[in-house]
Image (cartoon, rainbow, N blue to C red; front, side):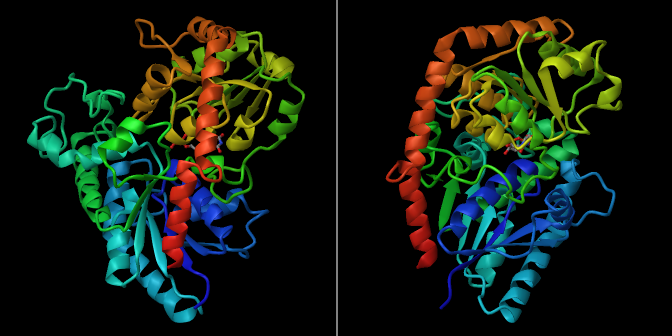
Length: 457
Ligand code: UDP
């Protein structure tokens, strides 16, 4: 028998594709061949972004299947995306696996599916292939998904997933952040129909992954002891970004502008404010202008990621305040998409103004970078609470009566965070724990090695 051949299938969102790609890359170091299945839509984005590097050779083979949506339809509409996935992807995946097994010498011997693609494990089971589920976000959010039936029974949510008391915080364990009902994954996604569709989907895939022999999570005991104690089947092997390659993995949907790394080389250690909001966050024009005035008003270097689609209705270029471009020229740098893992690992970075997506959170932590938290939706509020209330490695912002975070508030908090050295000290302590867990013999490393043994067997 040849080397194991793994098929890895992420949920089609940036914060899911990157960590599964990192995990896949770590697996190739053990000699495994990976077939990485994006949706056609994301496959094009990834291969366009990495056009100069994707050679089609090597141990990670990029392939794609349709997502059930039409060309030009809005993939950020999660209700429609969910329906599309449900309708076509299981059949397409089955066909793909059968084709690979018919035509290639080395058959697929294992499927690793994102928890959100739990149906892929049913396809694998049908074909007699063992499967593992991978969860790229916090164990707390997964524990919440696993508690759905109990939450219905306890009348916290109804049969459609709608919170019964709209204000009562939900706390699963004394050592984990409490969750506001409006930040429940499906509740924050749009109208009631979308919420119901996504809730039903989540309920079904949570049941499907119960069939998985392994349920591995992108976290560690050091970060989430409370949440991990709730569901002992969750096996933390992360953060995967802490062990992987920092750059040049074909996972980003936008081309990484690596010129900012050279600019960072010229900045003093610990001086730069890095501002990035992940792949989804969208700003209204007033908040965007206030944000643009913030880093500009601070007397320190800043690197700001402005995705081309970050503003609502108006192009970012039309919104910059007077004098902003001059301030960028004198002490700032702006990019459309950064090589974020490499940026956060750079010694010049002093703090991270972040939307607190889980990947950004663990990437900041494993590089010892303190946070300014600006959550936008979903689990980002829980992650903010981990950062500010549980780990105490960052600060959050107060909004004014218009619900806007002002430039004064931004510059005040940046200075407070950098001047109060206790934040940096605690962040470095947490970094050490996290890095120990992924190093030889650490808890995440041991679980990962057992996982590899299982794949080989
Ligand atoms: N990212 C990046 N370049 C950027 C901004 C983000 O490579 O300029 C990466 C980041 O390192 C992380 C992912 O995109 O791995 C975003 O995931 P996260 O969970 O933080 O946020 P999401 O996009 O899912 O809201």
